[in-house]
Length: 90
Image (cartoon, rainbow, N blue to C red):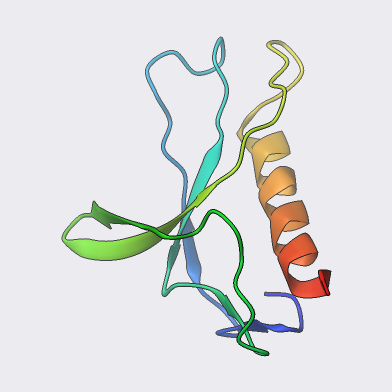
């Protein structure tokens, strides 16, 4: 994870609906929960989701999905951007 966030490493889960690639991906789930080291809140990360018996923290983010261009790989780049933004927002 980027400097400014804790823990230093975590797992990420992505929910892939049966309609993927036509409809996009827009969430990421982290275990353990990702927080800022300065204690400031990260918006839209307050929902817990149980995945295989463990409580993951959902990051709800939405962006324009382009069928034929976007994919799981481009979604993971979005997730990386969200993390960088969370770490660097004053």
